Image 1: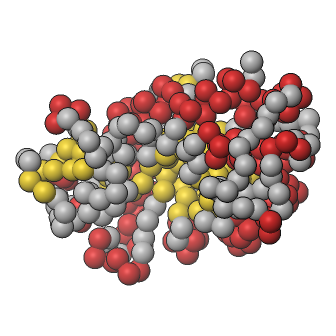
Image 2 (image 1 turned 135 degrees about the horizontal axis):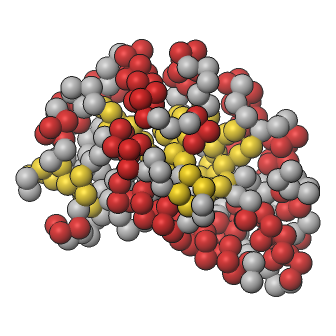
Length: 312
């Protein structure tokens, strides 16, 4: 048995956290600082934090997103799961990348020193895409990383362990009808992904597939009932409905609307919840106090520091 009490029930006992009902909850900026000034409160928070899954969001802050180096750094920081995104090249190779055009958001990528602002992965072969090098906004050319194949991620971390346990993957798939130019037909796309998963040799308890596109998840589940699919949503208040419609026992949701009441309601239905993407001390402690089962964060290192301090 994982907890003596539901973590949400335990979290409700933490009166000093400053959690209010969702209707009254202030914006993240307005929330008062976390107060854990008694041993009892810290002990409860320690218990919850120790039982939480920690997913490294695209790896960890400070490394190029969705690269093997970033995933390894997240695992080495203590994350038990690496969260990654899938895109596809013109020759139908599945790669780990967040966007179809690999030069936006936190990443800065180039191909032989040339800009990639309008170059889509779907218009490249993997032989060409493998020459791309990506880094953070302020990066040295000596510290860039290539875009890896999904199969290479499976291979590199097949026997990798954190705290003696095999590492896990949170695989996010994207397929949007208003961006069909970046993907093959959905059925083909799902078959390509499933082929990589089946050939990986990974047991199904070591990964799950999440997506904002719940229809695509339903289609994946129809093809592979043995693979866990997880609805990805923004507003935690819709978590129960989203999980129920897919028959999922896990949901990944935005953190700001997550409260002990929301988590308790999900646990009452046998549904676990992992929150994304809190990155500050206050945000991470908010999620811990909610009683969530896990966290997807760019700062696995910071979560571990917080957990260690709570458990001193």
